[in-house]
Length: 315
Image (cartoon, rainbow, N blue to C red; front, side, top):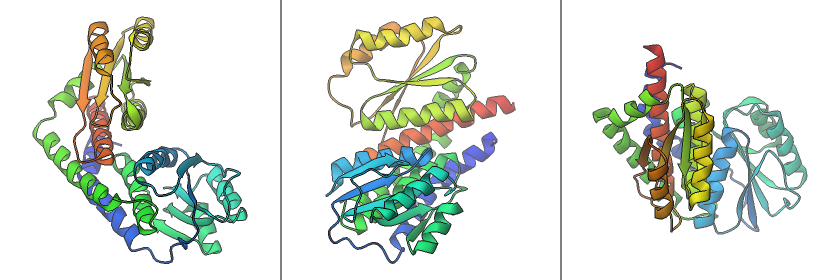
């Protein structure tokens, strides 16, 4: 994908998030809520990342346990379980196998997918399918996977405050995009120093962990720069791990620090140690109302950095 195509995907991200929410809100024939005691969110690849985020939000807002299980059906799944089959492509064989297992276990099923064998199987079984846009592009992939599931959970009374969270996401993405339109200097500065080095991406808490994972994916797979993820340090031992990596790398590392409002307490000392141990540090601070808005704000910044790296390659 060219830099122009990546940037164009960024421009459409807020509308894609809203469209995904509307599609889920308009879906009929949802499973019966009565007697549901747990939710299993099945997903692999990008779907697994989205499922992990949904589990995190479920801890804050869920009325029953909401658990990301990967492409497997746990032994506890039964008639009291809602199994959400989350696969933007619908092509993964492992997801189809897990769907079969969940159905055989008696779980109530709903799929969030664009097509493939998974959608075909769900149509055959009479399972409700919420459509997603498989061509949404890397900038929208995480958002359009998470948002329909949150809408479904709220409609079924299994999680509260999701509509407000989604509205906050779209608002913040528009604000961040406007800011990047006005000033790309910090993104370009980072893209200029990354080639030939290793990006060491660090963040704390659930939002920081998921955001750092996306940064590593975009910098590596899209931007073509080696990247690794580490937790934001809490003491000298954590800092030393990054220093050893830098010393073992020919051209050293570029440290990328992701900050947000939902970090655990007690991080300031570790961050100060980073300032003493590394020369090339780039810090990005999330904005937005709520953890989902701040997570996707950081995700959008990752995509902007990836686009800047691609643009340098194109030039």
